[in-house]
Amino acid sequence: MSDVKNILNSILTDEKLLNSRAFRDKVYSDEPIIKRASQIKTPDTPQKIKDMKAIAYTPEAYWKTSAWLFYNQGKFMENFSDVYEYTTGFTKFYPTYHDLDNEQLRGYFSWRSYVRKGEYKAAPMPFVFIYAYELINNIGVKAPEEGLALLKELGSHYTDESLAKHLPRWIVDYCVYYELDPALISDNPDIRFDTALLKLINWENTPDEELFAAITALSSYPAERSRFYIQYPEEFRAAAVRVFRAVSAFFRDHRKNSLCEKYFGHITEMNCRLFEASVFYDRNTSRSTDYSLNAIHSYTCRSGIWRCRRFYGCRTRNGQLGELMKMLDYLMREKYDFRYKLRPAEVSKNIAGIVSKELDLIAQENSRREALKIEIDLSKLESIRSAADITRDKLIVEEEENVPEEYAPEPVQEDIPASDSPLTDAEILFLRALLRGGDWAAAAKNAGTMPSILADSINEKLFDFFGDTVIDMSTDVPELIEDYIDELQGFVS
Image (cartoon, rainbow, N blue to C red; front, side):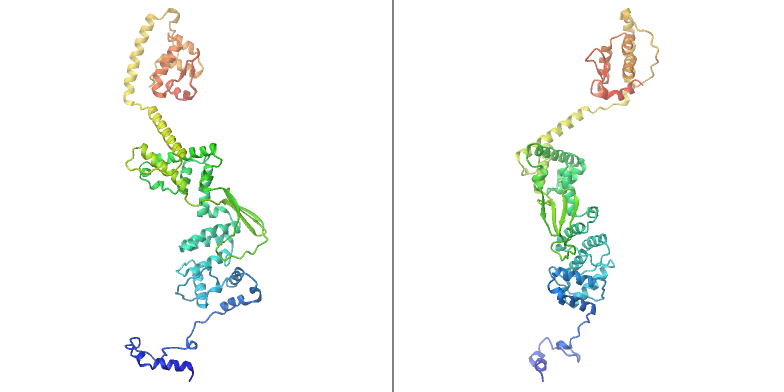
């Protein structure tokens, strides 16, 4: 009897073991309780998988890289599919086909078959990473545009922290390597960062709404969750844009570096490796090309060596920009006497002074606008017209009695239509002559008065409507203020 049989017999006839809880109270069939390795039936391995694994032992594979092996094994299995249920979880870093056993390989190719049909089932993360590596290498992909779309789709179904860290970067690299339209990755976090930063860099030409959106996208201070912002959103947005422009102008005029360079660093060109932390086989090592994602993010490749030009400083929500927004929030709460206070932010005295000065300017501008607001009570227009008619009649009578003969009015040939204008008929004729290039001196003479008197009377009566004089009498010749000519037409029509 062999040693194996002796061991099995000794175990199965051991009284102490047979009386143990593991064997007592159980009923067994005539199937052996303990089997030899040769008696254990293992699933059949498809010949295709065996042939794929054999590639690793070819003479060429001995001096090639692991990326070369992965690519060639992947192309060999590009159209293979399997039906095999694999439910065991496992973990591997930078997994390749060579790292998986037969069951894991069958499980992977079965899972991949479902994914290619749009069914993203639960799977061990090594499966997801291997599939991502396949897409990066354009294995099972008809065109690069399709591969990019599949990479995005993969990221939307699997949210593993490690995958979420690397996949967005691989998506950008994929677009660069295969020279796709940058618009295809406009939703990528890295590209959104560049887009927002470009708006801050071009602060002089960026519309207020877009500039505020860029500020909030890159600021570490959550201004939109501030109690003050929630109560005064329009005021805060307007002030934030004003303050950012003012501080940017200060750095432009008085500092060597711009505000964005202070906060986000400088554009730098450095060597880079596309698809870092993945398994990628570069089939075009002699390639030379130039590729630009945007004005502050571009790539060059010379003989397979890649270099990237971009901002290499802070590429996340910026703490210094956040402190600027917090200081604005703090000072606005103080000036509005807001109930809930904040602690001052950590900014320089210069910046704090600029923020405070801009808020004072905004307050002064608001005060001037309030003072210039004109409210007209239409219900009182009728009484104004009646009072004007009475005053006119009295003036005509008095003038007829006292005006010297040389200034006696001549009969007016022009009909004056009824109007809501607060001006008298004489003032209307005088103003009409100024507007239409007529004889304003004759109009004043016919009214039995002097041009300067008519001009002063018109300015006084229309001041409430315009908040300013409308006829300039700084010389002997009356001149209309050009800004008000269109509106004055309504008073003489």
